[in-house]
Image (cartoon, rainbow, N blue to C red):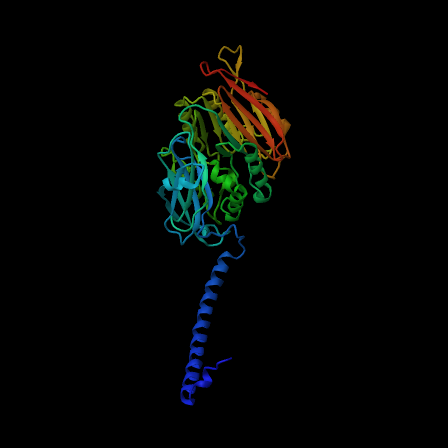
Length: 463
């Protein structure tokens, strides 16, 4: 049985109710239409800001571009940086020692993040989006301990739990990965390289990126590619980024070239206060388990860095010494010549017996060393091994004549390669440093071992 409510009313009440319903329909229609217009305007505005961006470029309330870096003693501290949209004005990171069940979360310690608003539109090639970069430096950690951490707004929007291990306080086995230039078409062609590197050396503690991480310094689309290509690996392997020439460009017409506007907001790196502020976070030193890694910026203020390099080597008693800069000291590609590096930095590298120099820039592969002649002139001792490598798809041809010309500097060429993407795994254990270069498909291409007598400082090179 059906029941018609309106038919049961008297005619007067029936008319009144019909008028009421009609007026309510007009009311709802008007305000509903207004609400739709407002919502449509907001949606159109947001769409305009994001128009042309891929979903993995657009900031949201969820953390993205999470990356670990060194800041302080690697055995007791670590820095993490991430990005959100501007509505996240306060952020936190939580950290706890690893356990085999989820109860570790009950003992997690919370750190308040430093939040930095950043306008991508500072470079006209980007959408004029305000994003928030957040950073935390975890302190007072236990050495040689695996931790789990997450980042977010402290309430609803969190990353997953991610793990890393602190360094030992003294000497111990260390492994890290070294990449030459990623630079071009990074998402398509560099992603497989970093993933193969992770598959090959999953226990590596950190990664040295020897400059030209991207091609156009300030273009956020390219940084989005770099972060997506590395994915969770960036948040688990601690990064040591080196500034390349492609991280130095004018942000606009008529403006002098400068370090990528994203560099400092997205990497939390050591600040060497004795240096000019323009070099902060692009020139720094990391001491990891008795390995000293000195990062130089081969793009500007080179004389000031020469003094810094000597200070960091003169006052160094680390068992192993490594220097990383973008421009190759012994350039293997035609038309490349970092003469300043050979004339000013190499003598210091020789004097303080640096073990390994890691370079990029030349989009080829070259490995050689320079024996250092003793004062007596009767014998040579082994100097640094110099490596130039490339991990991205952009490739140059080798210039054998140029490599041969370095013989006047004592350079001995050991291995070369071209038209190949590489990554390198370096393992330090006991009195040896093992270096293996792999191709993008995971094949071994080059290998050497430096063995050292720590009591005398004498070392030998074995292929």
